[in-house]
Image (spheres, rainbow, N blue to C red):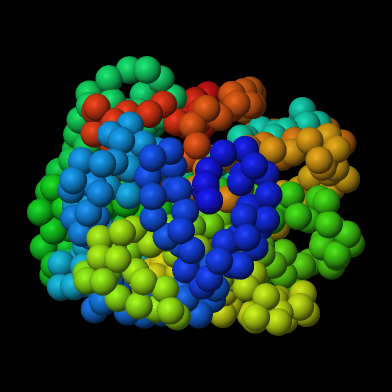
Length: 444
Ligand code: HEM
């Protein structure tokens, strides 16, 4: 079954149901010409995650079809699954070393200070939207906020931030040379590393540099890209998915004014029913093995479906079981499980709370069936959530909301690590409203 295309994107649960009927691990086409397997149950997902790296590898050097040149070089799946020099794609001691540096560095972040920081950034974004009486909550808010937060946490100066954003725009949104854009992106991260090596401060970049793992410059570059990328795209989707839910589902919209608990409940509900990373963590059996009567051939990619696992009917979960229950797999589990669910929760909770507090009377600006889901195998979110609300005068500087992103053209989203594809395999992915970041860095 194809795990891409308009039919899959519009109703992914239909596809998971059919796949589940084939077995707890079922065959899929990840993107045109790229074949593999996917878990369809909670138990199968946990089995794979718990047995990595002992029986399954994360490192794509085990991907047989890739080694044999059978994966189209311009495949969107390749962009999301190719080897990169960071923790996401390593196994064993190499992985532990890089992951420990990330975990220890992020542990320096004070949750109270983070909450205040997110609130300040959210309020600045809302100040800019409020007088207009209308906004796209994805393009003008959910897509901007996590990136701004991450850049601040890394203490990325405007000049370098502008180069990072400019490179990303060139990588994802234009027909420019992907190799040159990649080189510029890495050069900007290297400059940030050099800057922080010479003048360290209280920021994630400096904590990574000071870590006993002694990351090289090249490892610093890839780790910066991993953490910024992994921290932004799923957070954007979770904010957008939760706001959409609260605007359209009476069970949540009715309780919005009750305060923060309804926001937490909506976030939990989304993490269970529509996780921002729907399918990922591609794994490879080292040798032919059998699980639940299904032959898993060595070197064949097996995606872990967090979305199918969380909605596995054998869990017998009702809505009443979901709030406050974090046994879902939205943050994955095991060796590569998300190291920062607490940071993700602060960013997304505050983001949703501030919109609801500051823009009372907000309503969806179109019928709910006109909302479009983002295309793609890996991410789950909405392309736009347009709203109207009574305009509010603010003292904020004049600011023009960024344009709505153009209709997506590729079947996948940019890689959460932002580590670019090789030049020859540069599909032009769906457009993302990166321009807002350029405006931001320029103080517009
Ligand atoms: C709602 C927000 C988030 C969700 C749903 C989420 C989900 C995930 C998932 C499913 C993975 C596993 C990916 C894989 O194995 O292929 C992962 C890994 C990771 N996440 Fe998150 N994440 C979120 C936010 C964040 C934030 C805010 C940060 C950092 C500040 C972060 C940093 C990372 C890193 C570094 C990894 C790689 C870990 C490793 O391979 O050892 N994530 N995340």
